Every structure is written in C-alpha cells, then in structure tokens.
Image 1 (cartoon, rainbow, N blue to C red):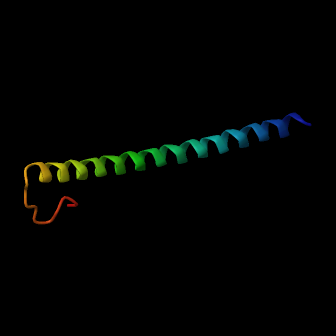
Image 2 (cartoon, rainbow, N blue to C red; image 1 turned 180 degrees about the vertical axis):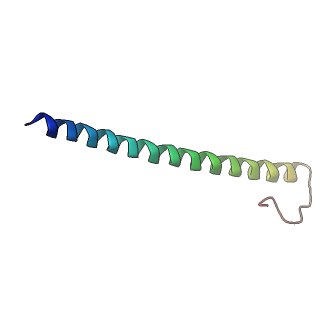
Length: 61
C-alpha cells in the first residue's frame, strides 16, 4: 500500500467523521429546541389547570 492511498483513506475517514459529527450536532439542536417548546407548552397547561384559567387560543400559540 502506498503512502498516498493511506493518506487518502485517512482524509476520507476524517471527512466522514466530520459529517457524522455535524449531523449529530444538528439533531441535538433540533431536539433541544423541540424539548424547550414542549416544556413551555406543558407549563402553560399546568398553570391553566392550577389556576382554572380560560385560555382563548389554548397554550399552543
């Protein structure tokens, strides 16, 4: 095996790992945003239930 093909394989491996890392980071960011949104929605419904509030549009807004 020549040195050039070994270097090409190493570069390819680094590029693949970089792509996987970026994809995982994006997935984590989306999941964090969704978690925050659902938590806020749950807190709204909890407050509405505890204080017997009549919400016009609900808590989804």
